[in-house]
Length: 424
Image (cartoon, rainbow, N blue to C red; front, side, top):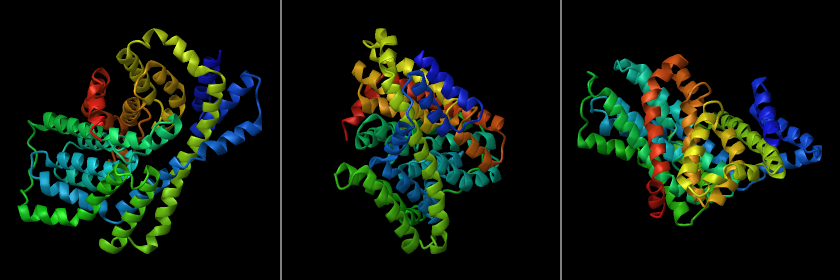
């Protein structure tokens, strides 16, 4: 009965158009009523406590760092560097898109922001060079979803805070899977374009490449500072967000001199709006998460899946399939906030490494960003490239398949993630 109330109240509220954050509150209240435990003060208290987390302070700072990078010219210099290195290859703009999205992912942690920034810079160039614009848009969208897997990942911060998992370990564990996602896209792009007569740009000289590298040097330092600082214990992931924002601001203002003081209000406002959306979701999810615990739903789930607890791989396959299905209908952050408190007790009971699970779970949720009908990243790339959703879906499917195959490999062969985790 509890499961039915949970699903009916949440999905019912969403079906009639209630925003997800308020649907989560409705879900929590419905469970309270069903358990004859309604108290408005408990709702308010959980709303406040849900957002009252030091770890979550990293979210606004990484978002702000991304705003400063785009406005301050750091993102454009990353594109210029990628163009100088691989732009001369057949289908070179596609390789540039992948290299750029991977580098951008290691700086901002936001799939939507990276997709919008890279798409705005490369889509006009791809269209001018007569690339298949649907496929090009699909590639950029598929590259954008690497951001939640590579540090500094905002979804890792939210998952770590919700599931009680070390954010630093999640950051380190996401490096190799994130890079492999980029490699999978490179191979897929090569396969789908190898027989096409695409325009080839002139090869840049070693001097030109070096000049682009020097111009982009300050931008390339951001992931080194973030990952190196966390690994050496200089600062926490939360403090790394502050460092990234201050660094991007300093470079944009004083080094590249493209970030203007007059832009600060707009950038702060944009970062504030994005942060407010995320934090409202986090706060609202804490209400339903608290009630799920009170209703003992995680324990009921453990009992339902008890036959699978002895087979970790089979259990992970079942969970991953479930998350893929849910990801087609729900955005990344709500999926994390709703499923984490339900699944984490099951993961711990089965003896699965929570960090390993976190990497696969976030990767899976990220794939949902490019699956219809919701697919927020697909919506973003449709707006940037001015194509329909149907066209974007046709263009994205080869790269979506590549991500799903890689997710399946990580699930069936855990050592692909567990072994590299020990390197860090």
